[in-house]
Image (cartoon, rainbow, N blue to C red; front, side, top):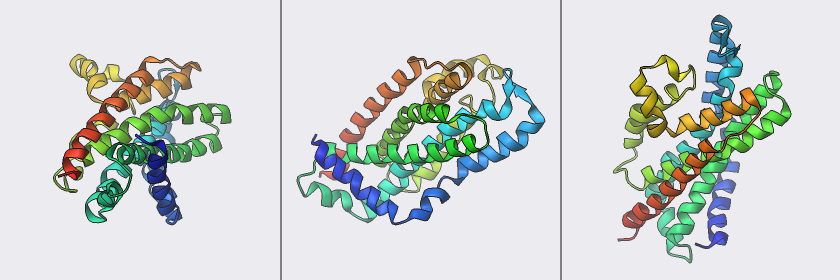
Length: 250
């Protein structure tokens, strides 16, 4: 892999995205709406969870969900459009860019978008006085492996789905349940025991929420969850390269 070519893929996407400056805010509205509805709305009725105000309880989860939204959406729908409809991938590999450069550049770009969305949520949390600027900075850093794993997951999906409509099914069957049952809005210990046992293995978002919430509540960062996320990202990136090669190179 040539980092220079991967950077050029990243930079091309950055320039194209920057021309749609309004999309930076509009596309991040979902996690912000969820924060307003659950944190500031429902939170007033719930009171405290695990000894802290509900809005503080879900704040790290909203940062994780924002990272998921930005990265996964970018490397599913948008990457598929670049690959299938705009034929950019074929144009890339007709130059000196190889599949590794292409996939890594796309995943890096998706990760960056996830971080931007997480940053928007963090800014709202800081303005509301829920977190301090220092906490916000650390939460942003911790959101990197969260965005990375879902960027890599999206790239793997793009390399395998038969059509763009399959993303709708995947979001409905897998992504939406993951956002609900990863310890985001309520503690996992209220669920049946068998669900508590399997959720950490099937939902990467659980580890992101666990990592960010652990820091939010204790001020400490444990390394098991980021290790799991980085390992999963590596596996998904490798699989993305394998399947994208099968899809693009005939």
